[in-house]
Image (cartoon, rainbow, N blue to C red):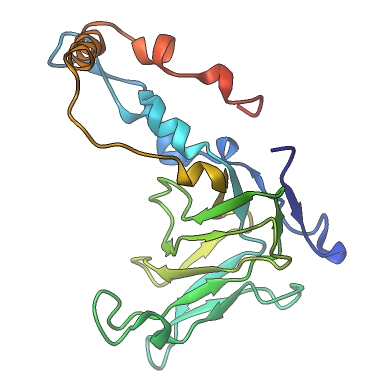
Length: 239
């Protein structure tokens, strides 16, 4: 792929937070964790937290984060207690809108009684021919008080921005989501890679031996994944 482009209306350039590599927006709960737990694990190696788990860090670093363009605050209606959303009057557009509950079958589980919402995304994603993008809830951002619906879009053909449907999951009625809050994670992929042939079978004796050897090394050597099994050199220059 030659490049990915994020395009906004000219009048918004410089006035809203731009998309950023997801590696720059790792959640604070993850950044704050120490790498070690000051104890040994069952195999005699230093006990590690998820902060030391490179697969977790790598998946959170995939693609880009499109941030919330404007600050949004929530509060309860003094008459009904219903959750309400507010934003500044001087914004260029309303950053949030409603979906009809019937669009998710909200009269039945698992969405019974839920109100689907959507963030209005000002950024159009443009990809080269043959490429699409997955639009996902920011991966492992458990601190966010909402859960986005996932989608996949052929961004080499569509010329409009993709809005972000979500459900509110916040446990309190009064909070503020600042402008720049991770809104959605965009991960490009080549469509041809999604139709690769597959096979399902039992391991050969050689493959079983390789698995056993790898498990032994995993539980007896520190950082073997980082040293030998992680292809960091193939990840490009964004990390």
